[in-house]
Image 1 (cartoon, rainbow, N blue to C red):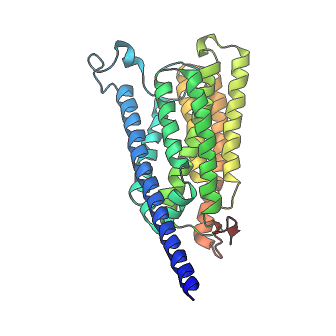
Image 2 (image 1 turned 45 degrees about the vertical axis):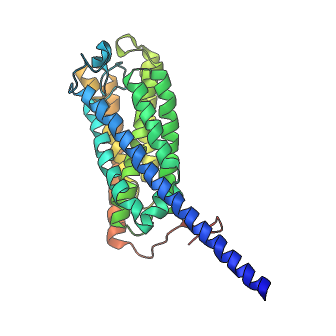
Image 3 (image 1 turned 90 degrees about the vertical axis):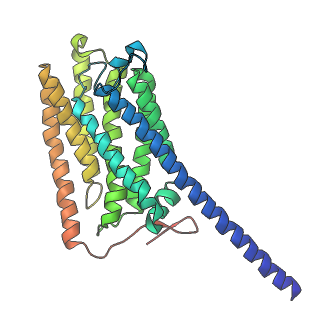
Length: 308
């Protein structure tokens, strides 16, 4: 009997330790999310201040710093209009909601802290390095970071969407604070990877030849294909991702048409094609909202598998 009571006491003690450890782990990740988000935001505020000429470079920045910023740098066939970078502002607002609200609720904690774990902080830190190298026009180095960020963002978005989304029913809080920001950021990273690829490996548009034009059309086709892949991957589609990819192609058109490049009309054509993917996503989402029933949620069970 004594040994039995000792065993129960020991099990209770171990259970308490596990609970405390999990609490510390959650709290550590939540604080890490806040710190990396603030760093991520500060980096982009700095970038926007350079882009819009809001900083006095004479005393604070190196003399050549004035030329740095979003929408400034190497001109290629895939350079978009500067207004596309406003998407980052929207992403920051939505991520702020995720940080301030979603990750502190039980549902949000399960997704943002439990499932994503260190992926989200890693995503923001890598994005900061991409921002720094892109602003300094170190295009090959920034391309490496863009590639890693795009892969990690796609993986993160896939986890959020496939494991924690109601297939036949939509939850407003989940959509606004979790699926919308991660979907937008996923589409943004795909677009940035395409733009950065041309900036790193293609010549400037004034000296580009036929090969550069063919590669530009090929990449535009891939962007449009990614939009359709996102739209038709589920019943409700993926409005944020398809919206960003479609808008990005029109941003490329808007910039290239001012320079009278033929590639502008290819960007416009693929943008029109991508509108179909966006329309499908909107239709699918409306259909789920109006007729959704029999929701099925896929989540990770405690033994490592999935439950329905």
